[in-house]
Image (cartoon, rainbow, N blue to C red):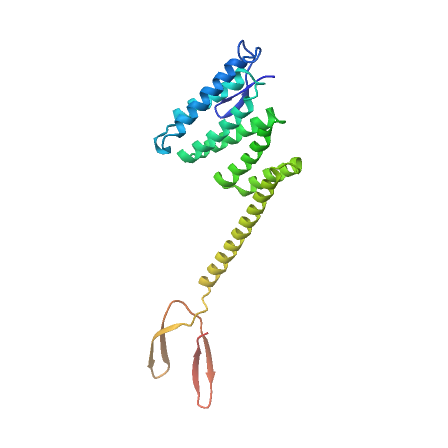
Length: 238
């Protein structure tokens, strides 16, 4: 089995090389995992505002070396899943959506390369959460959770997928309601129904005509009516 590496934001197959894929190094893999865990603890012990991208990348690279040294190591899927968690954390810390997509790629790597591990199920849910909570894409998230339920409906994680789908349905319903309310409000504003405020009426009588000027606040419509007994003209303001 060939290991994969994240190069330029894309997972690529790494050609077999001595000490990488052709020969397993379980001791090196375990040592790398222990180093990575300690590095992660030291990093997360500091306030988020004091952490740097380079520090996160060093920790991620140390976790990546676990499956480079020994793809079949029991800690390899854990390391790959932790990479996804760290990328998602980077996205939140540095407000950069690129890292959320890196996180999704890392989780998908776990799903594709370690499909029978428990981390694969957790990673599948994590993909949906990143779409929902970080990328604010409920449509993509719903697709992920539905796919999860089609394949793993009897697993303990299925309940969480169902809860997330209910949350998404509620969110979309509220969004539709807000959009409908906004449209109605805009329609009301463009066609006001409140009474017109008249601020003045002026009239001039000439030998052949009479002029009437009605001042009001804002646009309005009116109807002109001719009445008799006595003969007169009326203006109806709706």
